[in-house]
Image 1 (cartoon, rainbow, N blue to C red):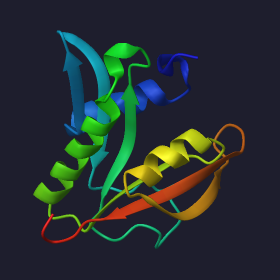
Image 2 (image 1 turned 90 degrees about the horizontal axis):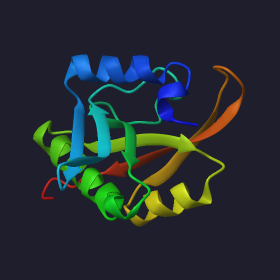
Image 3 (image 1 turned 30 degrees about the vertical axis):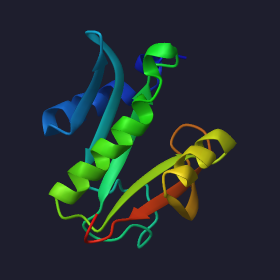
Image 4 (image 1 turned 120 degrees about the vertical axis):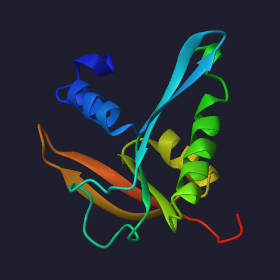
Length: 138
């Protein structure tokens, strides 16, 4: 299903755009990825799982074709740059707990699993919260 058809997702993108927290990745004049990261942890995240002042990655999306190769890593690196610019102690995100691929990708980028929760919004979905602590030196 296209993200534009996921209930509530277009509204979230509109909010992120208004907040100025979207970064687009382009290759050969074509959008191949999007990052939305802000110093605000969503209320769905269990209390005390994300360090205060962290930069929260709301979404990372990439083109699944060859044009998107390496874009996810570049966007995660941009999120780290933004976090350091905000003097954030950590980066945090959540993702669908039933995806071993996402778990592997975030493990490889240094995001440690700190909690799981069930999002009861439309239908129950199990999600994983991950945090990547940033050193002061980079």
